[in-house]
Picture 1 (cartoon, rainbow, N blue to C red):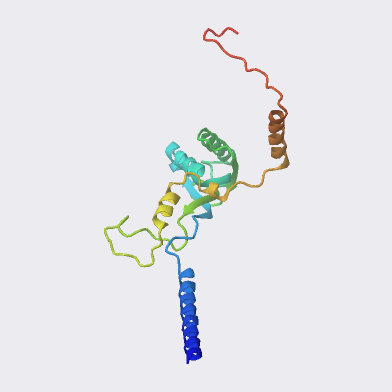
Picture 2 (tube, rainbow, N blue to C red; picture 1 turned 135 degrees about the horizontal axis):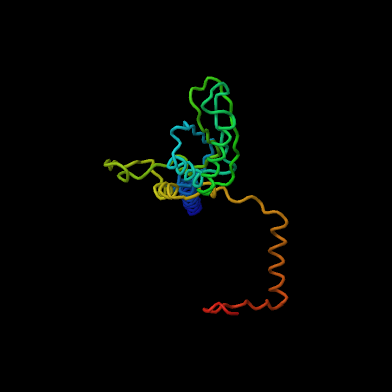
Amino acid sequence: MFLSDLINKTNRIFLLSLCAGAAASCGMYAPSHFSENKIRVEEEKNVQEVALADLTPSVLQGVAAHYRKHGDGPLSLSVSYDPHAHDLTAMGASEKAASIVAALREEGVVDVDARILPVRDAGQSSAIFSYLSYSALPPEDCTLMAGLESHSAEADEDYKLGCSVNTMFARQIARPKDLKGRANSDVSDGRRAANQVEVYRTGVPNDPLGGESASGSE
């Protein structure tokens, strides 16, 4: 009788342990309520065509501003002209391209690859700007919290905590391409840094910096 009770008690303890273990394993693998994805960087080819008649300084400023924020690499500029027309010859198109390049450089865009493009029966000449463009996007499968951009406050059962913060953060990034990080530095960068540290490590004093006076005399 005693042995039978002991066996039954042991079986009950074993079954309870199995149930507790199963419950714990279910808790460990429960889906997270937090967003686990990162902000994405989308790369695309940005192409904008503007008729030369509409190419005002403000339009060029807009092109330069978008390139500074989203662009990377050389900005390709093509100025089209009709080789059979007399209003804009190849020389005139080259001069126009040069003036556009100068205006872009004044706006901080220095890496410009300009060329002229003969197009028969084009009707009107135009400037075509193209470059790689990067945009920061919210994490995949992320939505904003209800009520942030609409009057609807209906709860979203699939909403992940942190999605709204990451979405707002993605919109405020000044240079989306910076999220891709920097390429590996070359050997010269490492040597330059090592030379700077070596002077400090060996205790060699630096040369004194020359000062300036208000009168300008040394």
